[in-house]
Length: 177
Image 1: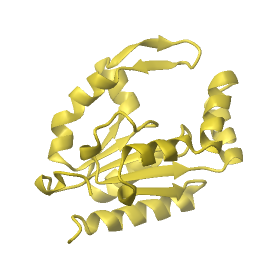
Image 2: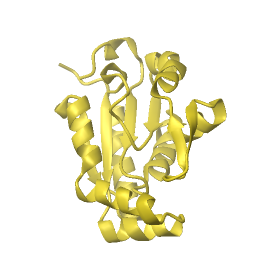
Image 3: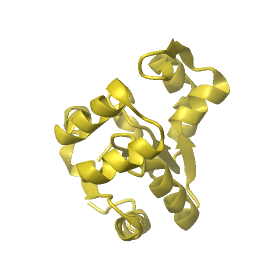
């Protein structure tokens, strides 16, 4: 378990995965079901200018990880957060009690990203990330394995099941020793 989680009354959860795996959909549904606070890092970066400019090749902001962590420190210490982001290796390990890695079949992911207008390097890089399970490996390198779960996220049924599973986990938190 994450150190210092006994100070928090509610857990912090990281929902991560390749873009298009359903992080925001899952996080929003989970927040509604549990009354935890949903923090979408992409939105936070845009709203608070927590970036170092724009990457023309990938068509996204260049996130300033230190500014993001500074912005989140107090709310993460309070607990009760669902953090939604496609990366996970720069967040302090102590922040999270559960890390959920969403995984999507490559053909489903390709269709989702294409519908979002992803093309060229942005599309191929994200498909490759999913093929090589980059986000799962990143999670395993950054957090204790006993707090990581990898779940399928191909359709509405998967998302509904994932939200129910995580909601049950939250109801049982904190775990008894």
